[in-house]
Length: 233
Image 1 (tube, helix red, strand yellow):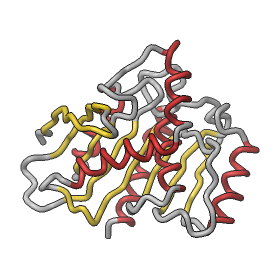
Image 2 (cartoon, one colour):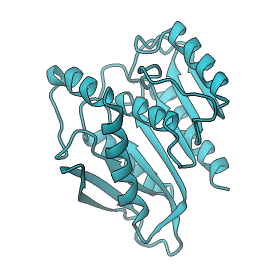
Image 3 (tube, one colour):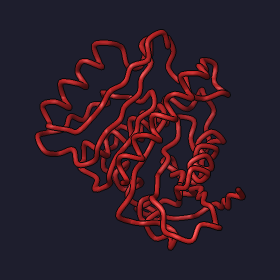
Image 4 (tube, helix red, strand yellow):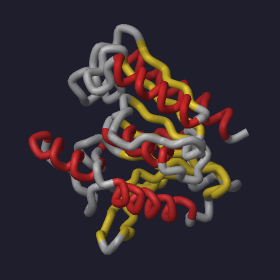
């Protein structure tokens, strides 16, 4: 299967953003679309790889740019950049919605079947978009920031949620996971939180990271595919 990829320039509130589109050009029917939101380092190779992986599974994928200009930052800058963007809820909504417009404008996309996935920083972004009632079908957060300071109210959460965490993830310890469960229950959300025992690290899905767990990473991906299979039937 040959996947077509291309950089796409778009805008949100006057800021130029550069995303990454991936799709199978041989498919004749319209397909579900998936937004991919990157880790705290920005729109890096891993986010683009995941967009290609999704395209190979029959989706049209768009790796969104949440920093502007297709920026990839150094680890020393990442914490400040991620914190300033993730804490600005109107900003992340504007940039996410701009990416959503790019995705749904593709002729190959069935705009009635849309989801989003995110890793680490991006996991927190897609969870917050769910909290803000984005009108897509579902979101998947991989080792995301599950308690970023925005709490859903009753009826706020429209998409189905799948959140996958490592048991020993320092960014999502047990007390934060309990708070997430309480919040989602109180909001009446349709959600599932999966915690992998023995995964004592944060970014366990990225083979280029320092804490890669290949078996659990593969299991998480297959769980996401099963989730999408239910979501889009």
